[in-house]
Amino acid sequence: MNLTRRTFVRSSISAVTALQCGQFFVRASDKAGVRPPIVGDGEFVFECIHNWYGDRPAKGHLFGTTHGIAISEDGHIFVTHHGDVGSVYVFSPDRKFVRAMGDVHHIDHGRGHGIDIRSENGEEFIYLSPNDKRLGFTKMSLDGQIIWQKDRETINRDSGGALDDPRVKFRPTNTSFRPDGGYYLGDGYGSHLIFEYDRNDQFVRVIGRHGTADGEFSTPHGQWLDDRSGEPRLVVADRANRRLQWFDSDGNHIQSLGGFLCPADIDIQGDLMVVPDLHARITLLGRDNQVVAQLGDDKEWRQKVLANSMAMRNLGKLWEPGRFVHPHDACFDADGNIHVAEWVRGGRLTWLVRKS
Image 1: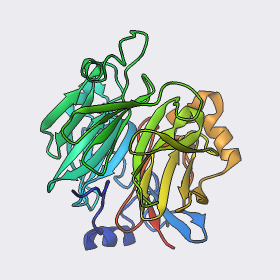
Image 2: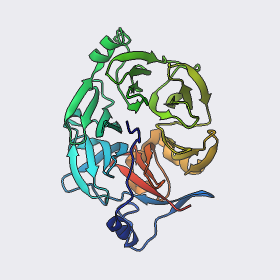
Image 3: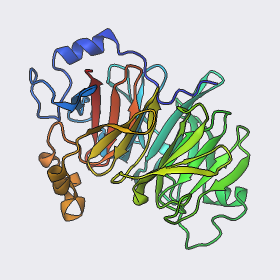
Image 4: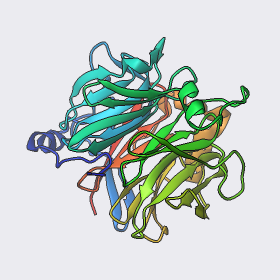
């Protein structure tokens, strides 16, 4: 089984040529010939290309608020959003709009949130988490065929009543995968629990509970498989507790790591981990989980972003090239570049092209 998450084939010659000719955008107002800003330093320097799709994804299609981003093995880019049409927009490897999909998560408008892609026996599948209590986790093919859905009733029955209390909310946020074919479903905005299933879709266990102690969560917003140590471990972005937590394959807590502001999700490539932090920065961790780079770590800018109940997220005219507002999801491509989706009104996608 191929566990490469959000993998990305090398960009086509036409895409590289387009970049050189100034056809990608640093926001819609950027002019051809103006080089994108540079972020990072030392070994981790990136060219920062915002909103590479132009003013809008396509005629008749707008982003409401962008949330998640994932990349299929052939290089197609899948972006979830709250908006119209559908809940997922798909772009080709050369970053041209292909189609809207994910109507299953459309209630008055798209409710797209978490998205992850996995290859299973030679076929890729999308796992969607819509962060809406009326909807459930959904597994579908790349062309939108629904394989299964797990709503509150299903999860509660499978888990033996973990959601029996009507005061406990159900708002799923993200999915991650076990190396043996199983998967984890994270109810980050709801019960603060993670539900584990095996490769046969049979329930295994509940991980965590709501709280602040080690092994407990307050908004387990995203997770991923961390096998850099040689042993597969589940790493969780415990967002409101401002930390990452690691668990072994039996769901036992191993360690916690603080120092984050509001960690939203996780991706790993080789020895490098990327953590998009909702409070205006992106952190890169090395093999031993030491911080090797923090992109956009500017306290003065962060104060502006967080001021007035994060009002800047609604005011695109205030966003500055080379600065992040609310990084919500991020993933590597095969060349070590990073793709970022921000939680802002009108949408914002950034392609961080690695220079060193």
